[in-house]
Image (cartoon, rainbow, N blue to C red; front, top):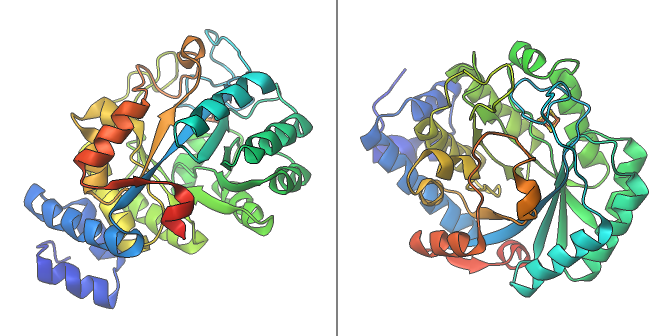
Length: 338
Ligand code: SF4
């Protein structure tokens, strides 16, 4: 494998395509090589989307979960879990607040919960849409008929992280589920008219560099519109609580690889980077990201949405400062994609 990455190497691969070994070399690059890769990734982002980024706001509206993912603090078998679900009025008030702050993409996120119904969610989507917001869902696997309800109400994008393209590791991490089923569900979302987003959780115990390359190929094969990476941070009270945290520097290389390989996907600077690295989200932008998500889950409930322990909560001011620091202009999703 050619491991020496130079500007010429990068332009050659950009012209002739990235092989598995090339992507592996990117993930294994040293710090000097990584700087060249980040510069090339920024150039691709700026060419595809302009020197711009947008802010979306997320509300985590229900946390009880029927699944038992080994890495997640909200897993069914977590005895310390406190369940909550926001009501329609609360959600609408938060969406209005986001709108008043210039945000035009509203991200409704929940665990795979039975604490809300499909019709209820349809009505929430319709009301948020009528404010003039794009509605993005991340609510796991439900009935296919629900997808039509939500799509018709105005939700247009759906994120379902595949977490790892390693079949065996997936089944170990998500007991009762298969990678094939996850991929099939992503294709089902597409069939029902959604733009789709996916990506891995980087640093899961047992994950390999080769499987991260598989993640990149899977994202390409699914033709996702949104691709993301979060770094594994152990959640207290889970079977993985004593496992080592994932490597955010490898995460940054993964962002650059996504930008260079997939080119025109929306890539968020996710909060785990800020939690693990000084200026972590700024560094994500420097590696090719172009989205940041502000957390608008009510303060009193946030600590019960335990996807990892000691979360970093992205505020609006932090998001705006980070975009500016990265030399980007804040825009809306609609304007970025027009
Ligand atoms: S990762 Fe999602 S599906 Fe898995 S236990 Fe946590 S909330 Fe449930």
